[in-house]
Length: 320
View (cartoon, rainbow, N blue to C red):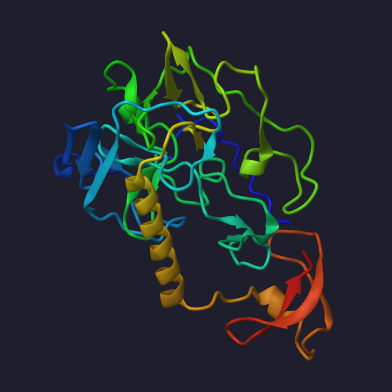
């Protein structure tokens, strides 16, 4: 299958790219309004970025109108909640979005797509080159929103009191990599399905939470002097992937806006073209006929049946 041999698992390691400065365009304010802390920004960073679009990311950075309010008195619940989309916002107004919507998909020309059926979700920094990350562990979504998948080295150098920003439930997010370590570990052995190959951090499913292997809980949090806080780490999960407090509606609404944007983009782009190998496998065949082909960059044959794609092409769709 497709092997993404990118083993850059440390967030501080960079992929160098041509810098483009947005420091003089960054606008952010942080205000306390009642029991809420509100961060208002245009979404542009206060530092240089890589070039966008690039080979792994087709989107261009654009100014946004963002206001995210979180509780100033968050309460830790007993059950962790999965966090999708933005899990927090940095003090410079740039959002933290460690997850991706991309999954292993051998029928796609790139080897991944928004089709979740494989169950193998691309990890942002584990597949950083494929997703066009810059040297501050960030890239751009289809709306033009620049966002972090891990700690930006330039931000880490200028922290005050080790505070990076706030999570969507209001708890602070600190960065103290020498003192606080993730309890997620890379699995040993090889993947039993999907892309196959050795667990190397390319996918979220390559990792597992091992209680006590670090000093942070499953959400990358712990208590300091009796107060609960989250931590950003240099290793997976980089930012919290789950939250223990009540998630602000502003983040829920922001996630909905992102998902609607993805849906609209898919409609605009039209149906995805099947890879040439899958098309050739069904030449002179009919719908439902057996087929097999080798996807690009792989010696392993995929077997399936010929099916009509949304683009009205007869292509070999691998058996999942």
